[in-house]
Image 1 (cartoon, one colour):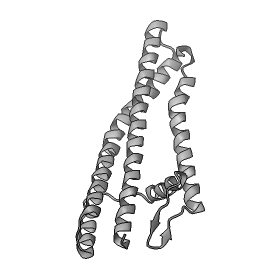
Image 2 (tube, helix red, strand yellow):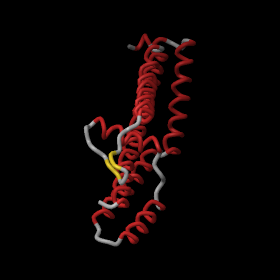
Image 3 (spheres, helix red, strand yellow):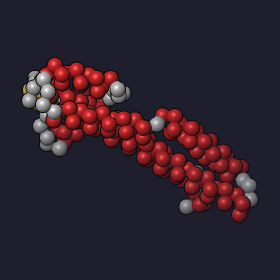
Length: 182
């Protein structure tokens, strides 16, 4: 495979990683909105049944503001739309790899394709390399084997750990403030 085809293939795989990241974020945000909405309903029911307490009022305000804010942020950031763009990009790149064209035409069409889509994050490239290593898949380019560096391992593990912690905290912490309901 030529150097250019290696580059296109790696870009395609990185865009797949970008799509997965955007889809995951979108799913977590949607689940969080649904969860906070459910908690808001439960607190509201508790207020109706037991009467208005200061802590229930505070929880209602917190959940209402959270749902309202997330409802504004999610469409504005549009992770689902970004995921679709990354998918469209890697599908176009994959098609490009199967065509029998000259290297100069391949390069022109590669750059033309990339100009129509947002760029992936460096983190997505690092994640693709680390996840390939975890799966035992060998990646190579013109310089030889692509193996994750210690910095890439550390960055990917750290960011995923923080994301997992933040997700669990966002979903679990509100329960501790609504003990009468659970």
